Length: 419
Image 1 (cartoon, rainbow, N blue to C red):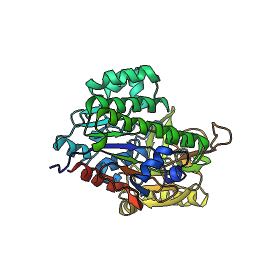
Image 2: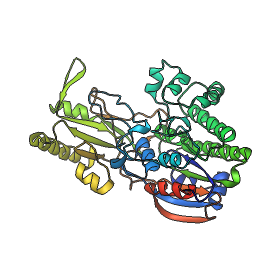
Image 3: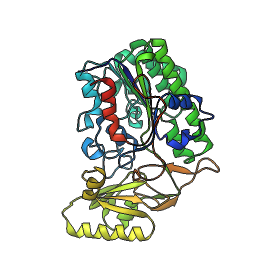
Image 4: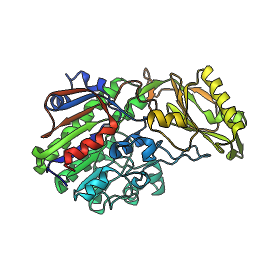
């Protein structure tokens, strides 16, 4: 049972890292939140460092091997556009939403990954919208939102936001829509718990590199959205008894080469194609961006397994792959398990794609002159690290913690909610 009545607002700023807020001279809100709250400077996340697996782990307190969300997409051999994990029912263990429901808390979610289709569990729900959802709704965004479980009572708020900011799921329009809806939910419904997920920082990192001027502007803009949410609680009269958590899911690393391992597997005779389709396969690669999973059709086939091992060794020597783990090793070291047989970290500067055609190895072309691209999916100990800032009645002012773990966020939510 609950022992206290303070509300909770969780804002996951996708791909925010400590370096983004280390120099706070131009970030007055972040400066104030850190001075008046608790900062965890470096949060170890899960493997793979991908948005949907990490967000599933944040709300479940379990690694990807337990949640079952082992990638952004479901392994679908033959598809160059594998479908995304996005439904709460796909998570194989309990989540914080089971507990808030059991404890009679009014819970709101606005664009949090892997929550679609669960209006019975989440009282006020606007799920993440995927490209396929828009395609299935023939481009009608409001219909697409309704199809994936948006709460009926929120369609008016959503319609107003779409009309004001534009009918798009591209950043930053998508973030503006999300933030407007989240603020209105707070003001109109006063939920006990709200989870939301602005993604502009991640989008700009993908587009322009790790620490470009565009990323810096995205952090500033995100600061404004956080301020809007804080002001929404003030307008709702809930600010004084609300705890806020600003967290992140992963960092990024820059890359320069694109590798399509499936094209190489076709050349090695391990994938067979005809008329542009995969007709059969013995080994298949699924991109995790900076890592890649290798699936074997028959994991017990020693001949194929041996051939794949030799290929991975060869590609490591050629500077395509940086390191290789078996599924058993990944489960032991990172709690990552699934039907794959190997997981490989790309060599420095390598990003993987699922493609079956074209060049196996190509150079990344930046869309912004003078900028690079960056991505994630790498091992969690590498590169800039996510952060957490907590402020409100239950957080100690001015406290700085050097290290944390993303799997501990779940217990923090429980503690703050008195569950």
